[in-house]
Image (cartoon, rainbow, N blue to C red):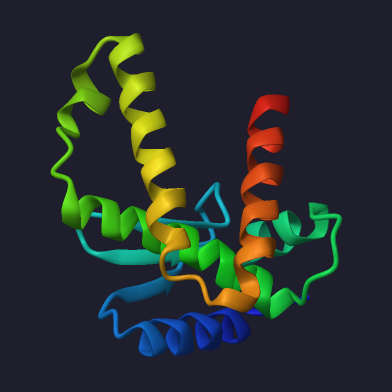
Amino acid sequence: MLYIWDIEKIIKNALHELKIDLDYAHDDKLAAPMSYNVSIKTIKFNYLEINGYIGKIKFKETQENLVKIILYHVIGYYLDFKKNKHDTRILMYGEDEEKEQLKSIIETNAWEYGRKVVPENLLDSYDKVREFDKQLIKSL
């Protein structure tokens, strides 16, 4: 099991290696393993959700690398919002179809932009986690 300080260290080191200046914080109320808050430019994580998510992954990879993979995906959100100025008002006030379309675009972009920062040795695992995540979402 990874603890808060373990995950903080992984995030800190990965952000440093990528030369990305973002804040990060633990949030035990977060319903996802990790997220990016565009308004305060902060990565938030819930260590219990991370451990639960990692526990569902059925292929061989270290826990540290799996946290990095989750982080790279979240960095993809940061890179997407940095490059594309999405009209996030749609998420609050748009029609259901508009909301789903924008969420889909943002999610696809996050995976694609995140993949650009993944080290070569983790690309295969990143792609496997992406497929796992798709299946997990379909089952919900």
